[in-house]
Image (cartoon, rainbow, N blue to C red; front, side):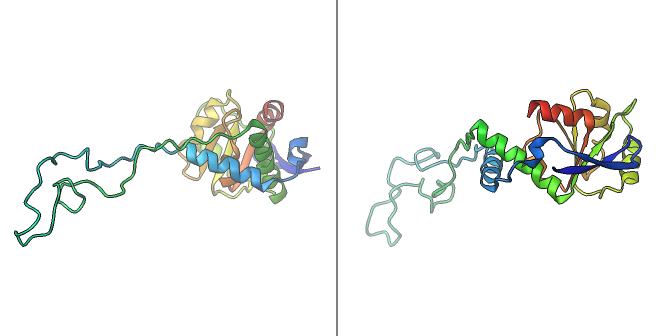
Length: 206
């Protein structure tokens, strides 16, 4: 059974706890690769576009006759070799959307969680909630827990608005809701921090 360190709301270490069954599933790197590739491709806008010879201003009449001028042959002033001409082999608007089956997404997500658990980089807190958005309070809790302050991912429930706001000013800390977190978020994080309430949501919904 996969386990993780459990911390009190103050950041004090309590004991090790057993993680849900999804953390014990076999790691499938192929599914992780396919899902992460699709996530990154779907983030691309794909709206880079340059004009072709038929789209730039100009064209029509041949600039000069074919022979006898001493100059190179030219058929139109929209050619790519002309100033203000077209762009040769330039980019075109392209849709990078990539579909991934639900089963592959689920396997990839569980594999990412299992990887972090095996690496000892998945941490659970009894509670991570504040009465008001306070970055200083969140920093104090993380410092007391001894978690490395580098690329930390906080997985929060939809109700943890103050926690979400408290993490906005911390450059090495990112925050994601349980329903929004994906395989790429888990893999790219150095440490994953989650509350017991959010972990229960994760187990029930993912």
